[in-house]
Image 1 (cartoon, rainbow, N blue to C red):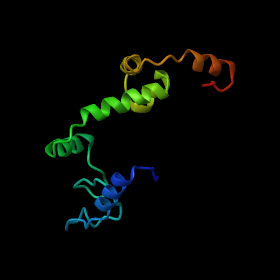
Image 2 (cartoon, rainbow, N blue to C red):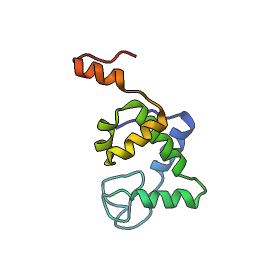
Image 3 (cartoon, one colour):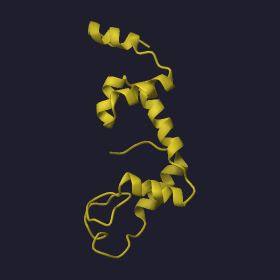
Image 4 (cartoon, one colour):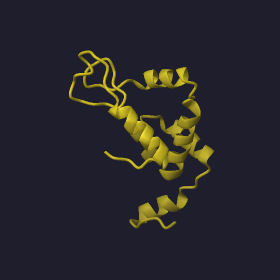
Length: 117
């Protein structure tokens, strides 16, 4: 699925995706992941990606925290927790960090009409 990215990042990722694949059986598999694993047709794990980023001096924890706070601002914890596979208490703490009040959303949802912003 295409996503909109800032120009410099889009060019960097496009160049990365179009680079020649290393020789070997995993590289010759028809599925073309941006970050392929050594197993054909599979992507690398989150842990492996974090290790690679860290090796290049790119910390992942601040970006993860920012993404979780943003999601907590955009979605109620009861909706977000199952999507991310996190416990409801964890997502509730992220929502508190985001300081978002979902009272209007829940009232509108219960009344069967869209929440106004």
